[in-house]
Image 1 (tube, one colour):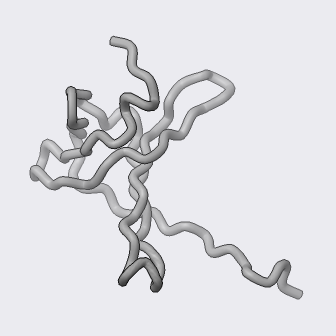
Image 2 (cartoon, rainbow, N blue to C red):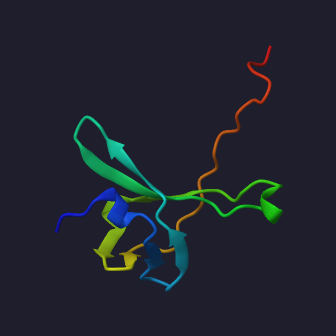
Length: 95
């Protein structure tokens, strides 16, 4: 089966182990040397009224995907732990 990124985007990801709804696919990570998809990324939800910040992202390895259906993606692992993004400095480099 061939699938484009636009087809994958916005599909809901569900864990087969505990039935948890993790979120929707927002991005993919590609290994440019091998030209293969390494993992899928689910962005964290926005915080309080989108003012405070947002939750951490989920990165799920491609090997953990069991099934890609019409509307959902089933993964074989339990709910992954969110990945913390490094904070960017607002005022440039620190001295």
